[in-house]
Length: 502
Image 1: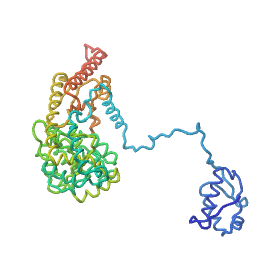
Image 2: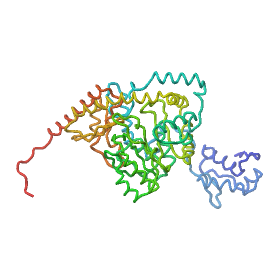
Image 3: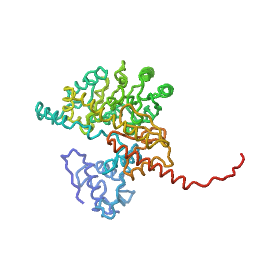
Image 4: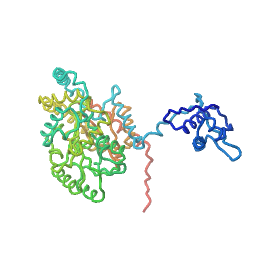
């Protein structure tokens, strides 16, 4: 056995000796039971101190590679060799054992349901996608051409993690139109509102923190908060938004990290928080010193009358983090959203954003900036309202025609959704599955709840289906419900004419 030593190496000599012997043992060069040279003899051969060899042997013993007894020396132990695994000996790795527990099986069910929307011939009433016809393609093409003409290759280059400075100035102007006065340094541009919520969750939530959410609420927010390790507590929503009377007692019993709300055309309920409740919510936040995260992706899409100002516009003490997006009112593929918050927090938000994907798309920011500055965006939003209102009305008519007797709902004044209570003999998951067989996709209400089961709720979206498709989709859904009811009556046992006296 010839041990090689590099006396010029930064690796200690005792470790070079142990590494050499370890390799020989694991590769089978030194078989089980082989007696290593005595410490004194090996030290003399290598020209090192005996203590150096003692330390090397001690490392091998600690790793279970050798053992020693007085009078018998140090011998190689029985170990697993580093021999290449044969193909038939390699077991398949179960990646599910390594996945975070916060990724729930129900989240995968949602993914499968949303994948249904891409199948040919399916009437999509499940997802809140904008209508393809509502995307202003020519307007975007013209804006992109002007961006390239004016900014050249810089439109395709890196931008600051917080966003293109001129675009953040344009966003500050948009927020001013919504009643919120802030500077561009208080804005962080994100890759859509979903990333905005993810950044907020990663920045604010420590595992075990409590977050107050509405019941029901946006399923993507629930996924973000759960993935961050939050403990969710819910407050019911009614026709005027979050029940602030119930929130008051909750805040008196716990100290949440923040309150998450969609006060304007709430997803999925479509409710609008009244101005009185908005002021009450802010008052509670101030009193209990709890921040508010306001999700306002549907605020511009009103069809009957303009909603109250955003919470961010009413906030006078810097308690509201505002998340906005262009995905619903303009188009989702540009992947641009933003967070508006106090300067003391935006720097940390930027740091988290930079770790995730460096920056939001530069070209997308410059295109939208062009639309904002030129006034084309505001005109487009007016056009979008006129496109979606008839779809909302088409769903209202279809529900009145086909769903009376088995569904209850409220007509939303904006947004994309109907939140329906249904009476059917089918569990909602089975109803969704049978509807899918009839080429109609709906969203089970359980995906939108944090605590309550919502077993008798479904969410129907009217945004990406045409009026005639909405009519046909509700017709098919009604057939599924009626057939399920007929099956249930057919298998029901006969009722005894004589009942016991109790």
